[in-house]
Image (cartoon, rainbow, N blue to C red; front, side, top):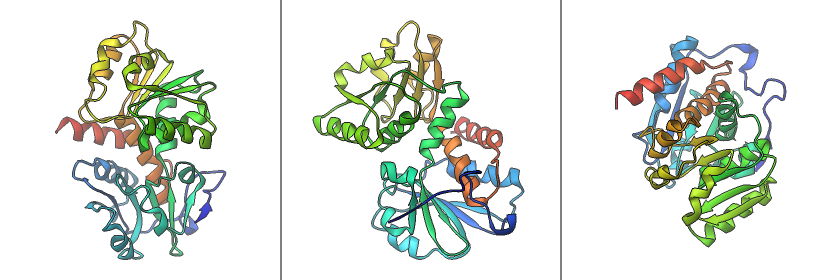
Length: 294
């Protein structure tokens, strides 16, 4: 698999001649996919950018169906957003992936270029960093991660750029502990692992990133300290989570899953359309409205 790099100056893909095609298609793929907010965010971006001929859809695709779907893409397609379980399954089907995607072996963005290449990237990692930066978190002395799945590895990759000290990962099994330590070695992060039973300790770190499924951290709400730091909870529906609500009630800064979703989608829109900056405010407003209507 060849690697590729975006332009080091702009960090964004631009169409030849600086123009944007009148009619292009993009979509989010995954299974399950009906809950995805990506169509809402991307369509809001197209509207704000005046890309009236662009379409963004949603397709239920699992690992078995991915090769056939990819084979059916033609020149009318600009790109794909990928969610679970496709972030690793897509890699063998691509012409190259970015160093960011390679660092965690996960692709959530595919750009189809004018010359026919299919290039993979991971916008979750810069999305995490952008969401934290928006809340004033530029660097931390140490951090905690709750969970050990794919999002946890992206969190470690982000922390490798802003955390000066140790990251403690709270996990449920020895196998997961081994995985997180392995990711730490690969990403250049000092990772200490601890059992999930001790997860209340995670809340004392300057930055706590919760990457677990809905309901998993509810029992920790009662353990939020009197002066909490920053919580980044990657969930957005239901919102707020019990932990996020308790955190905010104690005066702590909270970054939510919608923040991550919007910021990673901003990078996707910029890469797929060649237009930058993407309309962050319009995309966030559309996402908030869609969640409020659920």
